[in-house]
Image (cartoon, rainbow, N blue to C red; front, side, top):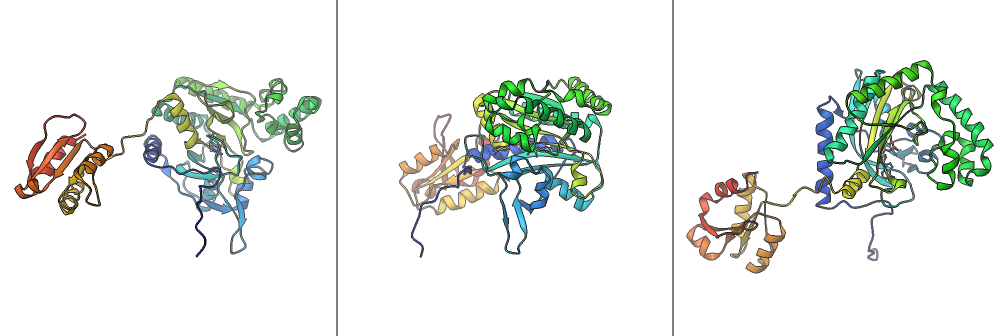
Length: 421
Ligand code: HAM
C-alpha cells in the first residue's frame, strides 16, 4: 500500500463546498432562466477536444502559447482541455449543421495554466451564450443586453460595459500595421515583455496591464480610423439599440480582448468592486471568421462568457446575491434508538419537506444542538413517552414559543403547514 499522504487541491483549483455550492447552482439557475426565456438552448460539448480546435483562438494569444492544458492521449491523439467554450461550440456547429440562427447557452469549467491568484484560477467556470448564423446588429444588442440583465438580476450595481468594434478582417489588419508602426516608434518606453509581444502581435500590447506601459498605450492610435463604412454602420446600430434598451456603455476604442477571432463588436464587463488586474467579469464579441476557420461555410457568430468565480467575488464585494438558505426545514430528534427517526424523516421527505436527523444515538442535548445547527425551523422530538403515546413533540426553533404535542399520524401534515414557503 502506498504511504499515506495528505493532498491538497492543485494550485489554481478550489473545492466549492456547501453553502457556497448552493449559491453557485442558483447563479447558474438564474442565468438559465434568463437565457431560456430568450430562446437559447443548452449545449454540452466535451471538456476536451482535438488541440487544433483551440489553436483557432489565435496562435499568438497567451491562451494558446502559454496556458493550454494539452497532452497526448493513450491513442496518440493531441488533445486539450477546453480553455473556453466558443471554439468548441463552433466545432459542434460545423459538425452538426443545425438550423440557423442557432442560439445556445452553456455553463461549466474551463482550464488555463495561469499564474494562480485570487480571481484567476487554472480551473474556472463560465456561463455564456453563442449565436451562429445572423449578422444583424440587433442580435449584438440582444446578446449584450442579456449579459447586462444578468448582472442586474444578481443585484450588481457597479459593473461597467466597455464596447468597441474591431472592424472587419481587413480593417483589423490595417489597424495592426498602424499600431506596429506607432509602438516601434515608442519601443524604448515599453516594458521588455511588451516589446516581445510587439514582435508577435501589436494588438496584444494593448492588453498589457503593466503600469509602465500605460502612458504609451494611452496615446496609441485607435481603431475607428480603420473601420470600413459597413463596420462603422454596424457599430452605430449596436450603440443605438443599447441606448434604446437603457443599457449604459462606454466606448473604449483600445479594447482588443485576449482572443484573436474577434471581428466587429467586442465588449467587456468590468466590476469596479474588484482589483483592476482581475476585474473583467465577462466579455465577448463577434467572431465572423471562426466558422470558416473550423471548416464550415462562412457564418457569422457572436457570444459572450461570464466568469462565475469572478462574478461571485464581485457579488461578495458588493454584498449582493448571498448564499441561499440551503439547510433543512425540519430536524427529527429521536432518543429511543433512531428507528422512529428513520421512518419519520422518510415520510417527511416523501411529503416534500426537507428533513434531517441525528445518528449514533446521541444524547437529547447533543441532538438538540445538531437541530439548531441544521438551520431547521422545527424540531420534532420523539422520546419514549411520545412514542408510547403515539405523539410527537414539536418545538419551534427560530420563533420560540410553547412546545406542542401532535398525534404521530398527523404530524407530517401539521409540519407541512408550518414550513410552507
Ligand atoms: P474571456 O475574456 O477569455 O472570453 O473569458 C471570459 C470571462 O471568463 C472573463 O471575463 C473572466 O471573468 C473569466 N475568466 C477568464 N479566465 C479566467 C481565469 N483564469 N480565472 C477566473 N476567471 C476567468 C472568452 O472566454 C470568450 N470565449 C468569450 C466569448 C464568447 N466570446 C465570444 N463568445
